[in-house]
Length: 77
View 1: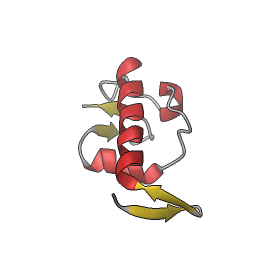
View 2: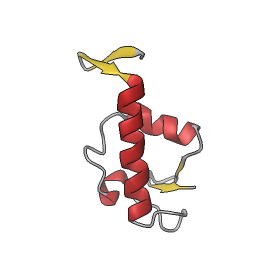
View 3: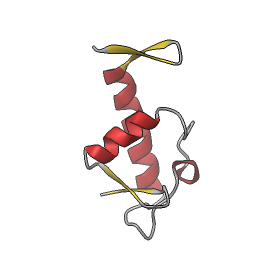
């Protein structure tokens, strides 16, 4: 398991990323964010600590699991 530091805390990336991925995907699916028209901010989707671990959210976008709109909202593919 890879470990790195964020704000002075050791983060075990695979476990934390898997949990964060699940939280974001479930929240977006639950609120119906399935297209650019229905996209939501992570806060509006009900994601806990929506501004935390932004790099993980970026990885979800890069992996093609979620899409980010020009105005910063997200939806699942």
